[in-house]
Amino acid sequence: MNKELTRKKILMVDDEPDMVEIVVEMLTDKGYQAFGATNGADAIIINDKENPDLIILDLRMPEMDGMKTLRQIRKKDDKVRVIILSGFLTEFDSPDTVKDMADLDVSERLSKPIENDQLLHVIRDVLMR
Image 1 (cartoon, one colour):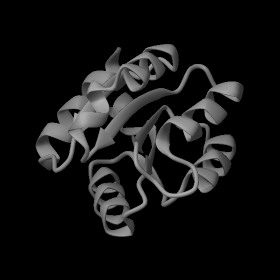
Image 2 (cartoon, one colour):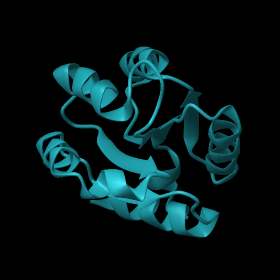
Image 3 (cartoon, helix red, strand yellow):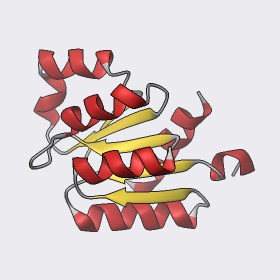
Image 4 (tube, one colour):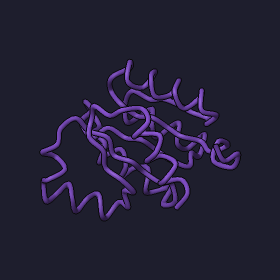
């Protein structure tokens, strides 16, 4: 893997702790600097502190969903790339969600469950843009 890519910082945000742990471990094993958060508030704090190159963000989370989290992040950071990862395919079809994703400059949207190799391929693709 490209050494420049492996220095990249990635923040994984999902309200399922197991999902966060699995993805963070996989990314760390591949040489990325990976961080995890299980809610939007923690994601905002980690984003401010670590300044990641990429955020992988779940849409459906309690208290602060993915779009609200991303709106808050975008107030301070308009450069970080974002992959939306959701198990709810119908949310991708909602006109409001589609507009929000365009307005908030979402790089990719993926459906759960996802194979590790597919996720890694999309991550590399997004980071190389």
